Length: 185
Ligand SMILES: [Zn+2]
Ligand SMILES: [Zn+2]
Image 1 (cartoon, rainbow, N blue to C red):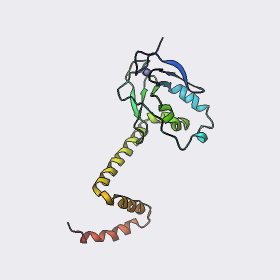
Image 2 (tube, rainbow, N blue to C red):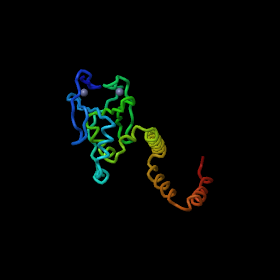
Image 3 (cartoon, helix red, strand yellow):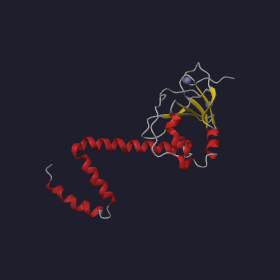
Image 4 (cartoon, rainbow, N blue to C red):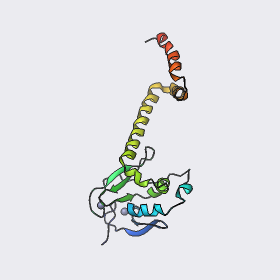
């Protein structure tokens, strides 16, 4: 039975390989691939050197991310979107019923490092998703401070980082805090 592309809908997926020994079903139209996490885990177990070969400087592949909700082409349930990181805006769609992930064109390349280190499946866990959210919240807070402090932000940040590393941070703060009395309200 033909399985249709969840994005293009009217195109059927073809057997392909996203790595030499990692089979998937891919769409010739949009370039996306349906990857079974079972196949992924199997592939990962046979990559003994993967961690060593994961390139530190991965170039960001061009990804055409799907923002609309997708239906799993196997069971027709809605797929769940998972953020990969606070840096990368893209999301991976996963059918939690079939354990099939939909990777948009270029997404595997983007995930290369995660995939090689065997962490691709961790993306779909609550702790990972929580971490992405808290990193984003921190960034938004940082952005607000940057707007509030303007030109002084860089120095203030530097001071904060320096205090963080300092064993006498409390004393320094107490010392610095003396100027409070002199600051006009
Ligand atoms: Zn397609
Ligand atoms: Zn499914």
